[in-house]
Length: 422
Image (cartoon, rainbow, N blue to C red; front, side):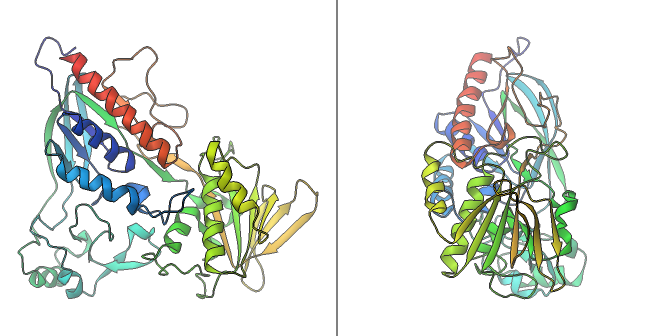
């Protein structure tokens, strides 16, 4: 209860990925006032960066477009992008939350016409493609961006390029004087949907991620396979652009390893099988080797595993590779021991994909939250009526469908929290 004072019925959702979007929509459609905060320039999170979902291999547009349409109809839902939580004080029913906003340098007048991007020659690393390519310093985050509004990169502010960008806009949408800001909101419950980040492959020193451009991660593979990715959907060797027809997928790259991530990230096995499907769809004569400790394809997803396993050009190698080296020809090679046959191998590939795991992205939260040994936000024992709720991968490794289920549950808990505090 809130010390006898008035209780807020507003729910704050922190994080605009699939979990945060789902939680916000469900709570708003149930009649609650909802505020949704996202730290980047657009909603969708990691799901928007996927090429396809498993097991049906449909595009993320399938789920995100429906949610965005629902959001536009929810008048009791306010969305703030480029916004983070700085501080939280108070208790269930009466939290005061200080939020910080970053400048977009583009206001709501933007029609996404793209004239600003055409006006500048300045380029910046493309965050949507994990910096695998570059984009204009005035850019639309991606083709499914919500809001559908351009961003001006802060690196050009104060330069002649910024003036070119502003001069090209016919709608007075470019605001080069925009600055950081902050404001306070009063809410009754907070849903933490802060998502995840890929484990840093540079920490896997034996896999020598930085030794060859033809060693990439699973999230980079998603972008490479996408039609709007850095290679236009072509699966190639980044070293020379040649078709990658011999591909290694290395499971548990850092996961289930007490030197890195001690836990299983749940989705990596199936994601790699999806990557095998990408390669085989692209090249009929391609061969894919999947190096695994053991395969975890839970529930109905076992059917997807059996489909990939039955492909004669996909080979499952039971092994935790010891190292990756680059041979005299410049090709990366996977080295190790097959734990079934006891044979040693050193196999060269066109492309090696490391299935790195998921780490919670919340970092050091701006308020005291209960986190497990790995940094995931978990409920305190006995605090059934807490106003602090986590969902999606902020609460532990989950796939997309599980994240949406978790978000729906979090919305219900948040509604119960604000109603109980009234």
